[in-house]
Length: 132
Image 1 (cartoon, rainbow, N blue to C red):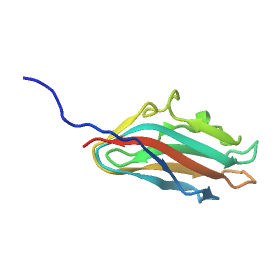
Image 2 (cartoon, one colour; image 1 turned 180 degrees about the horizontal axis):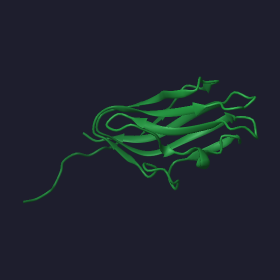
Image 3 (cartoon, rainbow, N blue to C red; image 1 turned 45 degrees about the horizontal axis):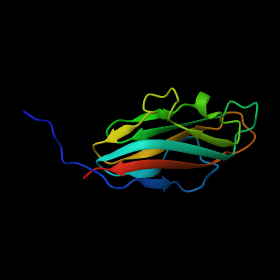
Image 4 (cartoon, rainbow, N blue to C red; image 1 turned 180 degrees about the vertical axis):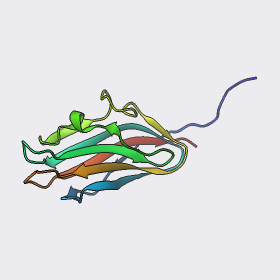
């Protein structure tokens, strides 16, 4: 018995969310991921972070075949009190090194303003490839 497969991809897609300004606390779907896609990398850019000494937090995760609201980037890795870009790979989250979407799904953020005096503004980016 052989295990050869003919599924292959000749593309890599780079997706961007809308600019997310002052989101309400909770889970928000930000990038659609099609069925049969392998997520290669995820980034979040904090344009305006929560105020420096706040209890505000933000995580990046997935919805779809499984739901894991902090599966890509956990708050301790993002540092929601500092502007800049964080990437999933190399982080401690369960799905940080990649994820296979056997069904369509989404990349999500989960926000909690806590006692922050500032509202967060962010953008999420993702590299993925669809295998046909």
